[in-house]
Length: 313
View: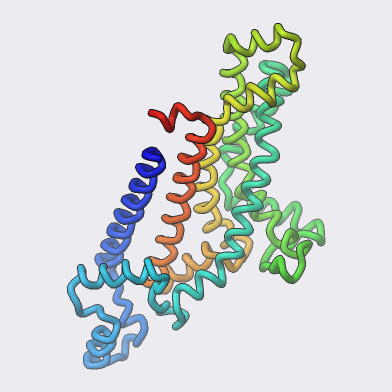
């Protein structure tokens, strides 16, 4: 219980620190949201009235406290660019980004885990060397370039794949997949390469330990040795890397949504930054922060489930 409590305290502290940094950064950035809303022709009286209405004439600590209260209650203010609550904009775009991230993680998991185990079992053989070479290249491929290549050589060649836009799951499951598969592959391929290498390394480290030789000497099949013992004992380092990959996937949607014109959080963030829509940018930054911190928290909790020694320490 103390382990979980410490993780929760760390989670809250991290979110609090990020909120302070985020709020402070947007106070010193150039650009005036009031002038953005009213235009360059507005007179000083209009500017002062709107500044007072938005509470921008109050001390910074009061503005921060009000903003934090809004975060806790879900009231993130109104978007300057769209003239509507930030919360509504996030809820409208969140299903797209969550669908993309979820599909990406599924692809990473179902491909990298079996490939890593296969390569570990075939250590230093042609298949292992070939996979290691391909994944080394995959790690170096920029996501925006990969996305464009997938559009050119797959999206434009096969009518099933959509290269822009989004079809909701409620409207058509096949349609949603057709709009998400290529963006998901764009994010997944470099992450598959990363996870493959860590899975392979973790499996190889376990295979060389004495308990594996003992199990094999008792006549257990190689498949049972790998799946019942080796993989289970390799999950701590694999889970660590997969947690980092989940955070990378959340951040990676920002670029990929632009490439494929997906109406998600990433595209919304680019639009908000371009229009100096500070309330919207702050809301999105905090969403990304909470998502990443929650992923790390879940990984920490899973550590204690997989290995009770971590919880006891």
